[in-house]
Image (cartoon, rainbow, N blue to C red; front, side, top):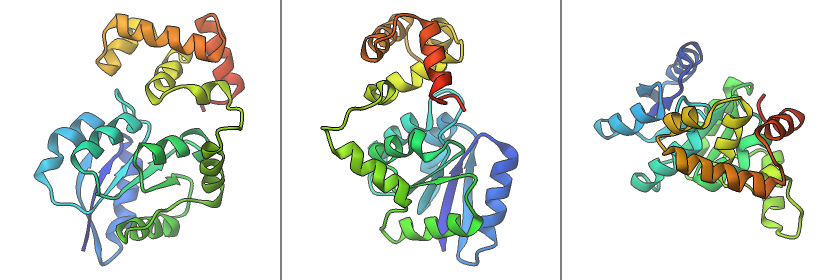
Length: 210
């Protein structure tokens, strides 16, 4: 029996995912978390084989949660199940320790295949994502400005682009205001921008907020 934990804040989508999984005779969901904090605080109470993790969690991002999870569960398979296109977060997710990345728009059959594949010790990566990973390894290829950002910088950049204040971002990510300001300065420097407005325009033009 493959025991699965799901971390996703969308109740309806999570219920649908549970329904798909429980139709498989050899799979069952042992715990559902609505946030990364809930996942990390309660996960020790369960025996499980696979974690299915959403990227767009409230507060700390799924990438941040994945990195924290890996400190305690370095070998447990993790499937990132995201509403974002793999071009947005796929490479970051794999680099952070995910064993696979699948879109919420993908088929139920592929989802089950992905779970079985990573449980069997393999990766679940589409040809498109494999190509992006190959490009990432080629350091001679010029990166887009937002691809130069660290995961934390990228996360804060998105919050800025969404119009959140420094204080709001600090509260969401459990950081000090000074730390967020430091990250903001790095973001502007790395991206060659000069204001929050320019960050917002860049994010819109590059479809980072979709």
